[in-house]
Image 1 (cartoon, one colour):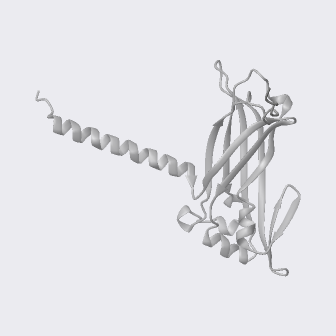
Image 2 (image 1 turned 180 degrees about the vertical axis):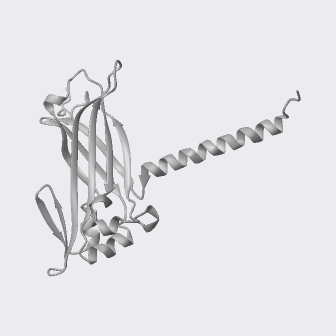
Image 3 (image 1 turned 90 degrees about the vertical axis):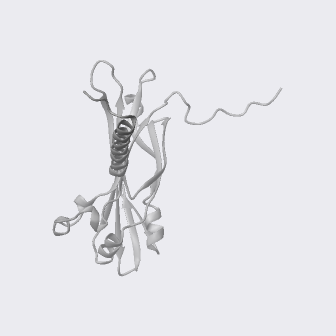
Amino acid sequence: MSLLSPFVLLRTWSRRLTLVGALLVLHAWALAQGVTLQQLHAERAEDGLALSFSSRFELPRPAEEALLKGVAIYFVAEVQVLRNRWYWRDARIAKATRTWRLTWQPLTRQYRVSTGGLHQSFDTLDDAVASLRGVSGWRVADAKDIEDDGSYYLEFSYKLDTTQLPRPMQIGLSASQGWTLSIERNLQLNLDVPATPPPNRPQP
């Protein structure tokens, strides 16, 4: 049996590394399509666990055109808080969902963003989209759900929700048509860190 030359071995490993690199790139692309997550932070608050996030994206041209034709565009953020367990599968202790509805009001020629029963109007699409890119102090778990000695992490996702588009528009909808905006991240929680820094003590 002949031994493989170092050149052949090097070429074989190079191909394998290239394949692994390509798979990693595809995996990253699958987790983040058209959205850059600039901040994802969670901290313990008096009433539970508060989450803040900010992102950067541009509204796809097809979505903007549909908006001007009277179609409502929805964005959805979803958070699952889980507790690590060594003896069994991790336990989900909380789940929270937040939905933003973006519409065009032709009578007032303004854009309207609705979420959680609140409504806000904007003169420009850029300002309306800016309000969709994040949230601060969103309570995603109650205080009773979080134990001091527990180890927790959260699964976060944010996307343009095409499932809430009119049914005829959903037929044949694909990423190549510019409708895909989504991102997914996991975050390990450090609940030992206080939500607010301690007050400065006077120097002796």
